[in-house]
Image (cartoon, rainbow, N blue to C red; front, side, top):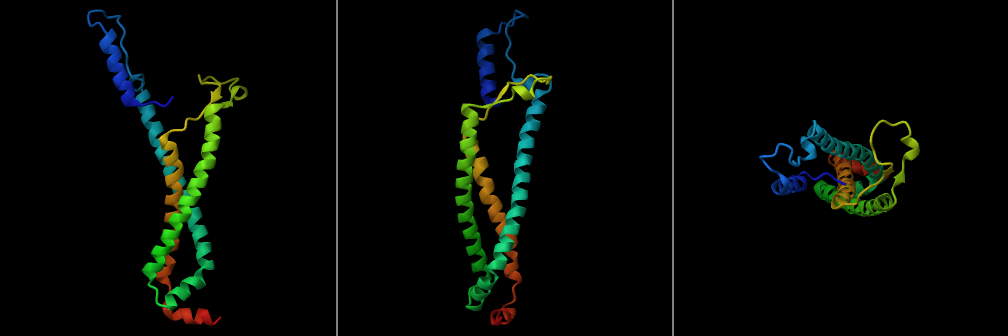
Length: 190
């Protein structure tokens, strides 16, 4: 139930090769959905909109995880100070925090994707009956809403979780470079 322009194009060429008679103006002609009354623009719009939605989701999650990383950074402020005081470079601390965020992002993405795919499996298998919501609707739509688990489902669930965690830590980690080693001793005395 997912529109694939390449498969439709090859199927269209096969049907036209078998059934099209150039001498008969009423012979069968197959045309792709994208060529029907501006639906190509609609399909392009839907694809672009899904990319924009994913980008906005990653941006929002980056801000949320940035805030979480800042809160974690405040709790770890003393740890970063001690690490700097014993001679660890700021770059090494920053890279180790990024590696930690990648590991946390992978773990969270695996768990989150697994939970989401359970719901998607339910929608794919059983669907949700929308008949009560469609009583006065003037749109032709199936009464049962379904999902389909594809290879892209794993990517859509996995990549944003890692990306948002990593971006949040990258933004929060800038504070490491603003730390002055001279102020560490004053903080450690307290």
